[in-house]
Length: 411
Image (spheres, helix red, strand yellow):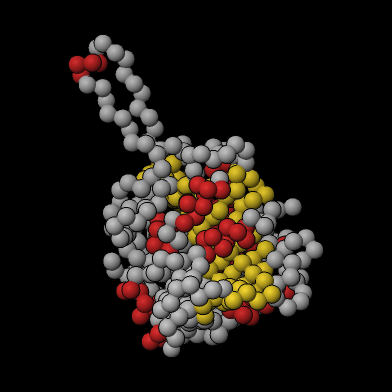
């Protein structure tokens, strides 16, 4: 496996018009084989010639169980026995009308994709949807396989919800940029100028409309999570589409905020202050620094600091009072990259702020000794440790996010 190269903020193209205060981080591995990995049946073989005259041909079953799917998921290299994503890929055209977005991307139509997993045994009636977004230049398959280890799919089988792994635009921001994996893309979040809502917010709306035309989805229980730029995408949905999501759970995210310098180009809409948040911040993140200012990977960046980002959202949600502190059990030892952190073990402190009168909440997971990673019992590849640090292995944040989501229904 090879690690995709990162790009520094200071080198971002004028075409994308990045803010000088912004930064982004891809954290991905290369995809290698583009076959299989879909929740659907293969087409049946045609009847033998000798039987064709005596019996009518049996129509071949569709290649995918979901009609909106057109492609199999990209199969990724991994350890023997690792569960590949079981969803199938929907592709569609997105029409762009925002003049600033059209100017940025030089097009009025773009190709979009998403990896969708809907359990075959979904209970009757409208079902919740969990949106999961990858990092910058990464893909739906990477966040599904390498970072969340398809845990959301296992939870969906158990509890009856739909998982949708999003994908950024394949359009390159400049001639110097490239996607890091097969089918990778770029989630622009609040970094790119736009008018009312960003290009990826409109993409999510269209995607959910397509999904809802085939499956019964519960519009009061749509949730968003993601890592790095994908975590930033979750924040953007809370800001610009509070009519859409009931709660978000960003992990080591680009810390977009409703006020201050890290609002950047986003436009908060009425209701953003009622979206509950569960966020993960890593104290030894070399990409999006915990303390604020520049990071090891992006010294030119001016991050606000994760605790400051937390405090801005606590204030925006109108929450009052000190949080309840839960020190989670240190189940797995040696899950911190000691050469960088000076400690062998990573631990997590969960801060749960008192809920507002309508139930809105903010839970803050302080991952001490963790790098730029998704907390999971499965360790990250050792080839990543020197650059990105280790992931905390004491919890699976997919479980934490789903537990948090179930507490919140849009009113």
